[in-house]
Image (cartoon, rainbow, N blue to C red; front, side):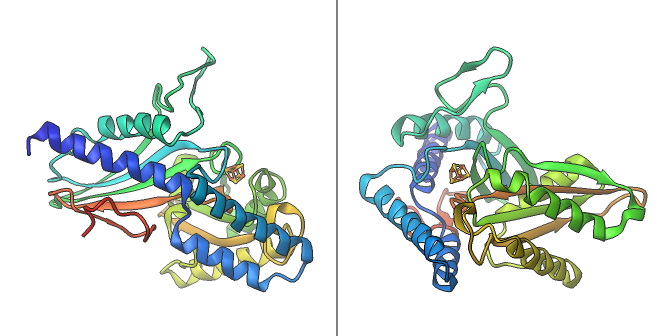
Length: 303
Ligand code: SF4
């Protein structure tokens, strides 16, 4: 297969994957929503969970996106330095977004700043968003897809605390944001908390935290304890599904941290909603692929 044809094949797979993930939630999110529904005792909350599952069923039957906010596409690319299409990835993913927008269809969510013109393609200046990690020597490529909603992950919050404020101030920051920004999204939330040395490292860590599976915990025991304490604390606020009261406010809290300068403690919060549509697809150098998030996706090329 020529290089051009190979790029076209990957574009088609990615367009289909973006479209599929707009209509079907990841397996881990579905399992957590089922578990939260079964533990709920408030009648209104139980009814809201039932409506969510009816919504999911109708999306499948009518072949439509789960939510009207089909997101602003963001990609986290973990690419091997020897992956054959490394130089074409941003272009082919941008084209995949254009195709998925027309064929799904996805709502037009990209507006050129200052010009205030909707591009009508979900692409534009700097859109979609790409974050890269290069893996030396590998010939594969792992791509996280995330349609970030206008009310959930995109308006995240970040700041740098004084180190003397300690990790208690991280908890204060997260809980304070949950009672304001947190309710802009549709609970139960997945809360991504990033800790780093600056606003931008903390913010990116918070976004990466949303890519971790629901129900996973940090390998660092202290961080895992913080995740549990935050989850218990946010649940105690009592948002419940859609913020109308109930036992659980969150599907989970994921914390991702990197090392920091001793004088700075950066912290960020990025939340995702019950409609947490992140996807993860991994290609080998022949474009055989594995999808770890959605067991139902298969275009005949999975490993
Ligand atoms: S918060 Fe999530 S479910 Fe609610 S409108 Fe936004 S994308 Fe849709």
